[in-house]
Length: 294
Image 1 (cartoon, rainbow, N blue to C red):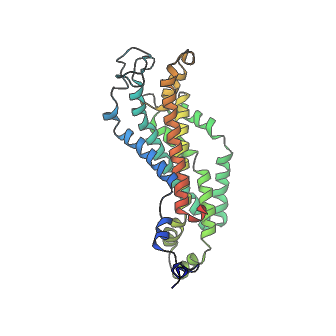
Image 2: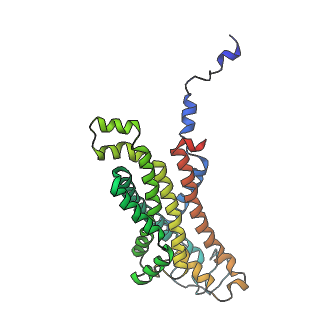
Image 3: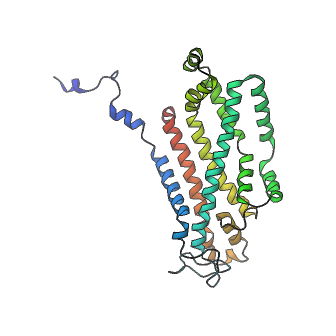
């Protein structure tokens, strides 16, 4: 028997190793999940990890980093390192609740429009077009200024102007799936529309749902920090955006060295969390849809 006889033929079925390799989560997604888990653990254990109470001024203002205050103190004597740890709660809360609401609304609108078709599809898509034509950021600022500065109001505002694009993506995917042979066979066998949607259409939407959730989480983190930076947010809660506002609003911050341990660590946390959700979305989309890996 020659060595060539041991080689698998081109038409041989894939081995277990090949099938397992296709199910492995891509490294970019694992990196994003690792970053997200790090911030999640920091947020959950903030009460135990923060060395000082971030709401109390127990030291002289603008102290440099030291063994007692790892990132120094701000302009009122609060510990910056403790502020960053406690501020992770707001970003993780917004990045979890907001995309959950957005994806739920987009899923209802997209499936209804794509599956029902006809006048319902036209009506819902025209509503999406109207929402997309509205300048969302100025309107969010206006609504937030008049509705209050609570966390629930902020999540509701961020969700109100974010479901349009995901709903259109879901609707387009539903249009391509509903005419497939196995979906038509399910109809022919007497399955109800809800059964078809739950068993056949929603599983096919998994890549779109993953991408939409991750992108909306990144958007929520960035917008929450942006709104808090301009003074629209919950003033009773610590957040990274509010820290950036306090740091950049301090007169003479850029003429000294205080910005190195006051501005840079906070900006790095915002960037890393946004990057984590971007990595998760890209990697899990490839994992859920192997055709993208090619």
